[in-house]
Image 1 (cartoon, rainbow, N blue to C red):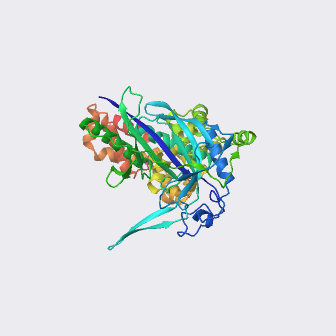
Image 2 (tube, rainbow, N blue to C red):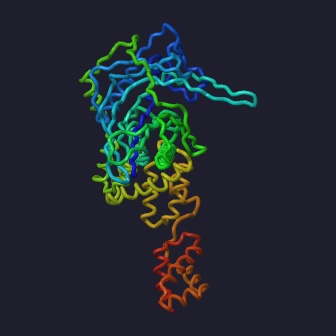
Image 3 (cartoon, rainbow, N blue to C red):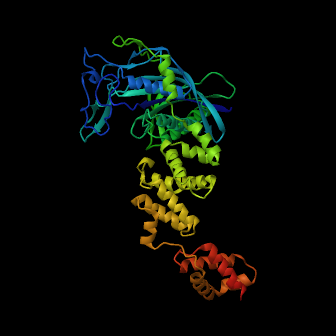
Length: 488
């Protein structure tokens, strides 16, 4: 029997606000000593009064609008009760039946084409404290860092519209890109500001009822999400093949072991005993303000991608990769703008900039774990480097070497070339000496050419490049090699 995979994702994203969700404590806590950015409100002391963060509410409205959601005219906060040790009050202030945004969607592009993933809701809550587990030779114990407690947390819940781990990764990538364009969150998964719980089940193709649902937690990267879903997809299919019962449960993901493991059963619905938060009255979302927030939305990735294709003649793949990161897209357009007086046609400039950014720039950023917002290469220097390639001052190989030195030092390419003596040699009289030397030292290659083997020319050009220590202009060198061979 053939089965299809059904995946729904719950994404929690910490919001960019100066203060926490219900108090005036700083919301930035990553670099702080444990338990130093706390107050009676985020510690959950009796008698304290939570006051909602208006900026956080606006961030959720803007996110909902970007995801084509309906914005509620009235919303409220609720108490979600569950007995976890990282929950300071014994309950979490969240939203239940009246979320800020609902019924939206996100279009994703993947190797199988475009897909529409419905967004059930976008709501607002407070983050919990952080448990830190310790082990010694004699004992194991846990410590509690309360700094994170109360940080504004936005939850985005998709419908079970995803059919594969690949689609889940594409959805997360697109969603993170939108949040970063909106600047509502850093959406950095490694730092915990963008967290994902995945619900996955399988069912016979053609069935409409969902199978037993497994929730996977503890995934701290897109790669981990993809690997966890791939493993769980196979595990559930193996269960069906062997007749083993699939249990509705929560499973953790072990990056080290490369597999999921059972944490707790969810066979019986957990009763969170939601009820309206008595300390925070329901609030109205003004339609006029919603319209103003909608006007403030930036050009989002999908729109910018389409514009890059149309305006700059880029392929859909190039445009998509460039616009996935707002900073990368901004840098690309700065290069195009600064080179606007260049005699090189617009589409050629765009293609050149795209090649550098998606090639060497992306490679070095990944190797060094750096963000493009911190890169030392100014757009003007990248334009200057490409001009040197166009003028045959540098070969493409030499230009890549110069680019890496620019990346590390921030020096302009002309200065690097001058200090390193890397100019490409195109002077025919200088090249002729190396050509004659290469031909004289390689009689077998000359014989091959005379017997009709054209590959001998490439070999001899390679020998010229060796003699020139990579500085020879390969096109001019090839012309001179052929000219010299025809004299024989």
